[in-house]
Length: 167
Image 1 (cartoon, one colour):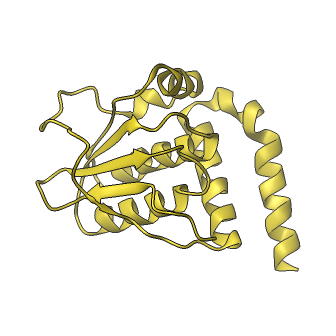
Image 2 (tube, one colour; image 1 turned 180 degrees about the vertical axis):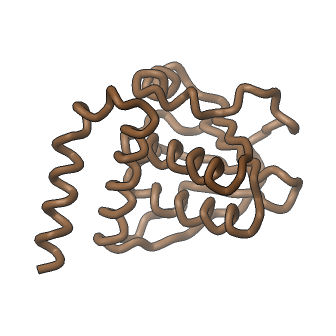
């Protein structure tokens, strides 16, 4: 699936990796975010700033991808994930799923101006997108077990869809 770049990253200006989301955070740009942050974590980066200044809304896959990043950082031995410049809707969505508790509340080490960073272009196929969606929804449940009922049908559908695609 070809998705126009909506994720922009600056991994060169400092020890923190700054990622700006332009447009809706969704299942379409979640594979790019997952892939990029995973590579950065594997390369030893531990501090991430996600700037939602230009992100009007998010779906559950994108929110789960943010949760999964926080869990990857924990598994890698620690680090910080700041999610900044949330509009009221995004703040409510994250709080409603209990994902906001995974983000650092420490002061930002650098100001976030939203202007730096190159586009992350990434092409994910249906199978990879389905896998990212599954992992993201599992992360939502891991972040807050009360989410299990909310995402039960989604997770079942994704498992069934993967089984159909495999046969």
